Image 1 (cartoon, one colour):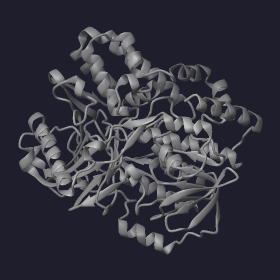
Image 2 (cartoon, rainbow, N blue to C red):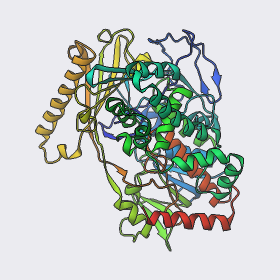
Image 3 (cartoon, one colour):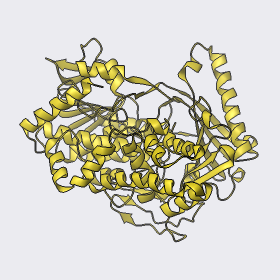
Image 4 (spheres, rainbow, N blue to C red):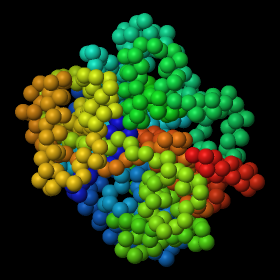
Length: 579
C-alpha cells in the first residue's frame, strides 16, 4: 500500500479507531491553538519524539457505536435526498457537505464503525491504523486543506501533530533521501545527491508547483457543474488553462523533459509510487503535483488518537446536522425505477429510498455487484473494460519495544534496498509507518507501533489450505521483518511483543482517464478513490466535495443551468464512451 493511499485488508473483526499528521515549525516546540477546523493541541512537541497522552475527543468504541445504532433506529419508510453507500472518507465528506446545505442524508455502512480504509482497530492496548498514516489536507491555509474544511463545516476539530519528515527513502546504491517539510531543505538534500541535475530538479518540481498553485487558488467544487466551471474560468483563466494543459499528462514524461540521470528518474518513480502505487509514467501529473507540493505547503499532520478519528468526527457531525448513519447495513442491490436509481436493498431485505444514490463502493463494484442483472449504459460498459488489477498489499501490524528504534527515527519510511527494477515487483518495496513516533498514546508505555506494507498479488494466496496459508503469511512476514532489521533496526525481531498479519484483497485501477462523479444511470453517483482525482485522503475528500456539489445542484440546493447542464453532461457521457 502506498503511504499516501487507501487500501483494504482482511483483519479480524474486532476493532476501534484512530489517526493523522502536519509538519514542523522552525521553533523546537509547538504550543497548540485551534486553527480553523484543526486544533494544534495544548501540549508541547519536541522536534522528534513526542509524548502526548491525549486521545481524540471524538473516538468511539465499537460497543458505543453499536449501542448508538440500537437507540436511533432508521425509518425505512422515509424518503431521503441522498443515500450514501459506505462511510469511507469520500462518502462521509459528500454526506456532510450535503447535510450542511440542508439535504436529508442516510449513510449505510456494513461494518460497525465508519472510515473504511481510514479506519482503525485495537489490540492489547495498541490502536492500529488500518491504512495510511500519511495525512494531507489538515493545514490552516489554502484551498486544499479539505479535511480541515470538511470537519469545520460540521463543527468539528481535531488535534494534529506536525510531521517534520514526510518520508525517509532508503534506496539502491545506499541512496538515502529525507523529504523534509520545508521545501528548501528537501531540494538542498536532493541536489546534494544529484548536483549535476540541480537545474532539472528545480524545473520538474517547479512544474509540480504550477499545478499545485493553480489548484490551491481555485474554489474546489464539481468539474461537472458548468456554472461553477465558467465562473472559475472567468475569475482565474490562467490557472484553469494550466490545469487543462496538465490534465492528460503524466509525471514521468514531464520529468524526462528535464532530467537524464536514470537513478534520479528512478527516485521520482519511487516518489510517484507512494502517491499512486504505480511509477511516474503512469501517475497523472495533476495528482503528483497536488501531493508532492502539499506536503511542503500544508504539511503532513497526524491526528491525535489516530486516523480513525477523522471518520468518527465526520459521522458525529453528520448526525448533528439531522442526517443519519446506519451501521451493520450491507447494501446488496441498487434499486432502479425506469432506469433511474431510486433506492437500495440491504442483505436483510430492508429497503431505503432517496432522490439520489451515492456509491462510495468502487465503481466496478457499484456496476459489477450492486447492479447485477441490469443492462449497463454503453459508457459504463466501456469503463468496466479499462479496469486492471492494481497492486494488492500484505500488511503487518507490530508492537515492539521502544528501545529498538534510534532516538531520531522518522515516522514514515520507504525501503527498496537492491534493484530499482524491484520497485513494482511483489514484495520488492516496503512501506513502513511508525505513528507512535508522533503520538505515543497509540501504544502501551515503552512500546512503538510498526505498520508495514508490501505489494502482494492476490493470486499468491489462492488455493492454499488453511495450514499452508498461515505458514505462508508467517514466512513472508519473517522475510520482510528480516529486511527491516538488516537495513534499519538491528535487533528488531527480538523486540517484537505483538504481531498480526493482514492478507490482501483485490484492488483495481484505470488504464485510461478516471471518471468523475456522475454515471450513465440517472440519479446514481460515485465517490471515492475510483473517481477523479484518485487515491489518497486528500484526493477522496476532493471527490466527496465535487460529488456533493453536483448532487446539490441536481436536487435544487445549488444554482444550476438546465441548458448548460444538459450540454456538459452530454459531452461527458460521450467522453465516457471513449474510455
